Amino acid sequence: MIPTIRDVAREANVSIATVSRVLNGLTGYSDKTKQKVIKTIEDMGYHPNAIARYLNNRRTQTIGVMIPAVTNEFASAVLQGVEEYALERGYSVFVCNTAVDGNQTMKYLQVLREKKIDGIVFVCEVLDNEHKNLLEAMKVPIVLVSSVTDDPHIPYVRVDDKQAAYDAVRYLIEKGHKDIGMISGSQEDPIAGTLRQQGYRDALYDKGIAFRRSRVVYGDFHYDSGMTAMETLLKQDKGITAVFAASDEMAVGAMNYAMQQGIRIPEEISFIGYDNIRLSRMIYPALTTVGQPLLQLGQEAVSKLITMIETGRTVSSQVVPHEIVERQTVRDICIHNI
Image 1 (cartoon, rainbow, N blue to C red):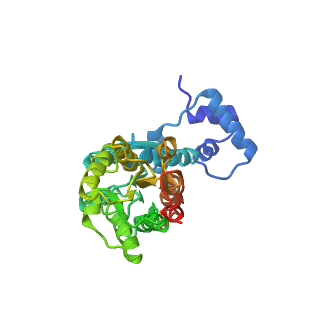
Image 2 (image 1 turned 45 degrees about the horizontal axis):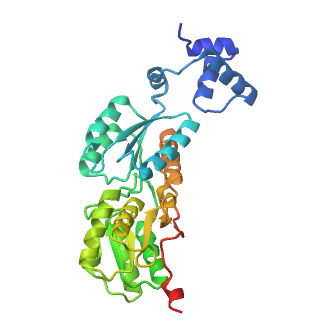
Image 3 (image 1 turned 90 degrees about the vertical axis):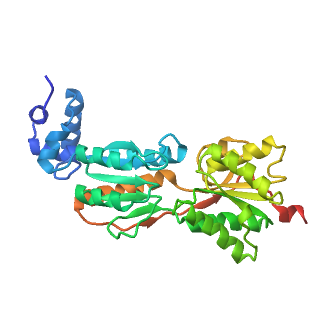
């Protein structure tokens, strides 16, 4: 017979309310009692019933994560941060792969509505009016990761994409580079696409370097588009000495294409990426990049979400710091010209 919460309480010689409080991470019992209840739960193999829990406190202790391309390393690192923190707080995670273009978002929002999840973490996606209307009907809190909204009731956790891109290009300029190309994300992406390109342009402008449209090409943040974009970039402007790519995957794709053409890295062309995924340090030469704290993005987002679920109040947004991670793909022209 499957054990119930009543069976656990009887075996541990505590009240059902105490078992419930332990399960939901609430206070009001000693550590000794907590350990006894936990051991009893483990020994009996008790698993809380989500439906019963919902009927009891109107929560399922489940959060939804809307995330594009869960197979890529950026997404998986953010998701790891979400899951680790959520599990520590007694929440389960329901993951929805919205695809790169977000065309499955509405479908999954309906699924999450049926599952009666307690809140949603949106990763790398802009909320349109259709999304917002459904979310308002669901009446659950939402936190954005690596995105932003003008709705003051929807907090976000992200790096400053424009400043991070600015710092990446400024780093290249300080190494003596003036002929800098950019492999940007999608032109339709108002966050990682538009903001990172604006940071690129601002850094050039502040250093008195003319912006050339021929030196900006577009990809979709993934490896294959980096190869294609590098081919286009070299056809449009053979004078570049450095490339800033808006993702590490595109940077690695671009590097691979350049090496296939016999171009030496960083002697002939330098590269800097964005994200600091594991791949950036596994390749040779190891990629210099803009580091985002991917695990922290996920952890901070779910922390804010759980606070909103359990208190009913809106929390503030957060911009987390980025850094330039120096490796082997940027040549210092200034040193070599001395």
